[in-house]
Image (cartoon, rainbow, N blue to C red; front, side, top):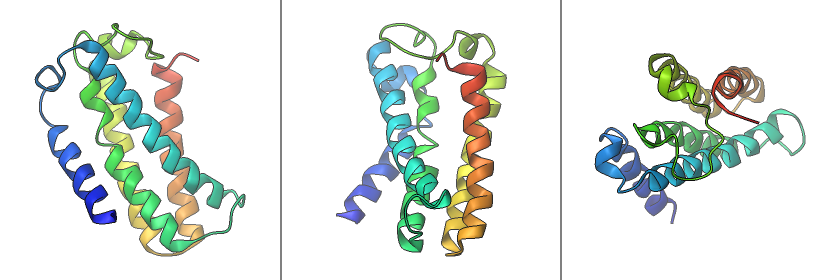
Amino acid sequence: MKILTLLALAAAAATASVPAAAQFAKAEDAIKYRQSSFSVLGHHFGRLGAMVNGKVAFDAKAAQENADIVAMMAKLPAAGFGAGTDHGAPTKAKPEIWTEQAKFKEHADKMETETAKLAVAARTGHLDTLKAAFGDAAKTCKACHDAYRNK
């Protein structure tokens, strides 16, 4: 089952480099895609946060699995922010995403970088290493939410 899930995630990541217009028939589809991507990413990031904050026991294997999913999922949402996807379904995205695309891309790239580092940190099996990387990744999430997400 894990292999099928990883293959599906890998296939989804491979399509992330295709222009958004080629992937989505309607803006609503792109919005649902990015929201779903963020939802899965957030769920697995939350599992790591629970370990980092001592709310659940640290489990090195679970941390690694969740961090790997977070790193993979961080590559996906950007494809759902193409031209014309600022409307078509309810969204918390601020209009600045489309008027400040270079700056928004910097945030997305930083998230990918920091979540990749998080996955590497999780492979060490050390909670303190995970905590440091988690904090850095969380900062990238917060910075982007502060700039580009309505409450």
